Amino acid sequence: MSNMIDFSIHQLRELLSRREISSVELTRQYLDRINEVDGRVGAYITVTPDHALDMAEAADRRIGRGEDIHPLTGIPVAVKDVLCTRGIRTTCASRMLENFVPPYSATVVSRLETQGAVMLGKVNMDEFAMGSSTENSAFHPTRNPWNLEYIPGGSSGGSAAAVAARLCAGSIGSDTGGSIRQPGSHCGVVGMKPTYGRVSRYGLVAFASSLDQVGPLARNVTDCAILLQAISGYDPADSTSAPREVPDYTGALRPGLNGMVVGLPREYFISGLDPEVEDAVRRGVSILESQGAEVVEISLPHTEYAVAAYYIVAPAEASSNLSRYDGVKYGLRAPEYNNLLEMYKKTRSMGFGPEVKTRIMLGTYSLSSGYYDAYYKKASQVRTLITEDFRDAFRKCDVIAAPTAPSPAFRLGEKSNDPLQLYLSDIFTIPVNLAGLPGMSVPVGMSSDGLPIGLQLMSGHFQEEKLLAAAYNIELEAGLEGQLPDL
Image (cartoon, rainbow, N blue to C red; front, side, top):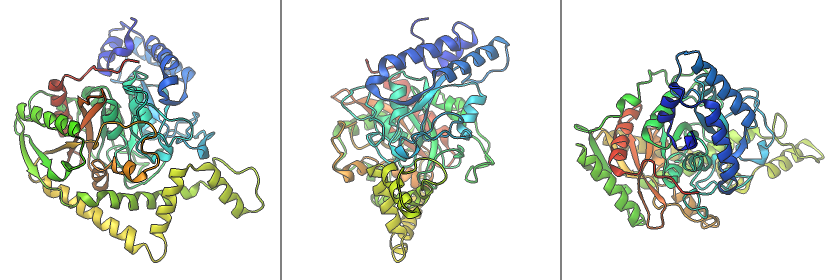
């Protein structure tokens, strides 16, 4: 079969089960596609062809023996280079970890491997997941497959671009302030940030530990549900993992939304929101209404403080987490120095890029003596107020619908000298991370320039099924599924 890469995960699952295709054939097609296209897109940091083909052969043997196989057995996927992979380079897109090979795999990676998924390689990102455009990678920027002059979003830009460009069947990203949903919106794919604690963070290289969450990116909602199912569940190795039963996510995918109440937060439809984005999102909301949902206006009054609170909490936690990169234990060490202090300074100066250094300095300042109460403590109090806003809102509705990003993707380099504008591109996604809620982006339209637009859905803690149900109904009616960029 010549066009296997055009099929979605659930379609490939059927073809593999009936042995109409083999995982080895499928994997070879994806590897050929990466060789052909990724030089222009730049989605991958490390491609692992030998490892992928070994896993594909093992998957074919499982299928051939008639064993109970998982929905991902034999399916080629990509993993953001912030998740540890045993024996495979894990760089976090940083010179600091350019040659780091972990001795163990993240729980998410182990779960994918146990279920027979085929890992094609590690995909690009903003360095240590700090950024919204994947321009902050130490190795190369990733480009948006819909228009190679535009950013794919970030920090999981490689994960989103790889799915959109058909360089993998699905991918895994991480989301600290919108890093799955925003690139999902910009690349026209489905991206889910699960509830904090739903997916193990063990083996996820930490940026901001109270905000980071691992999640899937996929071509459609069904594939997103399959990936989410595979990686969710309690992990005793992660103290923040929630010991809760994982529901059947694909069982939530049914036409019709009778009884669902959808909230529209007035604070998310603001001046500065791109008119094409607003039109597309409101069309998506009208689809929810046509499928039986009731739409009500709600208020999330502390939304305006979310970006400010986030850019104190996240850099403070980053400052603490990244102090471990000192040239002693692992990673880069400066080649020449006269004493220990000089070795620390030279190593960190050489190893970290400008954005990471900026955030470390911001975080160190807000945690310093005399400033902790004024900054970090105050930001934590604002975070509580934002969480309470959502709690109040979910007494009135089941799901909240809003834009994912204030505009479609922008040109590479357009905001490089304006960090405030870059930070504001996450204005609609950050509150979900501060509150630990699940959120997802689903494609809902295209701009006049031919760039994708996503609608964001949010729900209460551990209510991912509601998001999937709403997103599935939008997908049924929006007519965008299967629409892929021409590379």
